[in-house]
Image 1: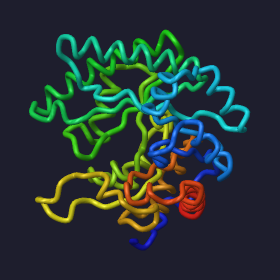
Image 2: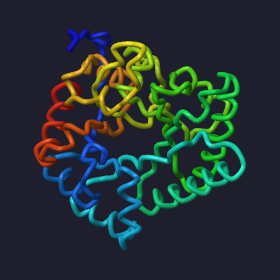
Image 3: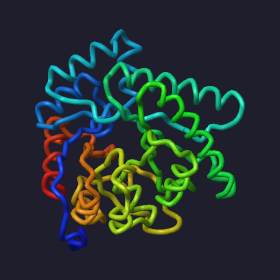
Image 4: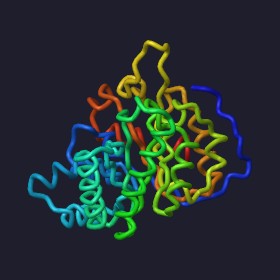
Length: 289
């Protein structure tokens, strides 16, 4: 772990909510995530969308899970995610927009205002200019759906794709000109794409819709694949990222939303989730709060 440096001596005091990302307990179901988050002492739950889909396909309803979460004393920070938002041709584009309508409607029913949108590598064979054109068009179409329902969307910038930088996200948001589009500051993705805490500190807090707190490393050689399950195989504090510096950078912007702890590690997923979720909460309290 690198030595922590304080870049921001005048960090603001903010309301900071801890959120358990449902992917951190990969093998469990949504009901179990609620119990684990409550017992560990989190404030909120980031619903991992595949778990919600499975819950609804097997007889559950959005109203039932909303009540279960509220009765546990939790809020819903984010619904994650609308996946493969780069789909842009023919029936694939129509399917994307249908999925956007569905997840947006579910977010409304659940009472959360923020849906994460996630691009993959489907555009990586295109030029940077074409990628920007397609992403701007697609995200504008998604944002228009959300405007009708009071839902906003936070863009994740996967480090292993060609749409990965903060400058690209800023340009897309500028082109779209809609206030319901922002960014999730994901520590690992930002770090692995070459961003720095100083870059985060320059962000307008209105652009930050969420934070993903996590750790990891970058590939050790050009030949090593970008496999998140390997590169992010650690509890926060055991990787390469200066978690204190990144956390201070976020806080210096005045951001006052949820901080969601995201763990992607098949090895750690095999631990007792009741103990793991408590360890993850302790890590964010140590480095960020």
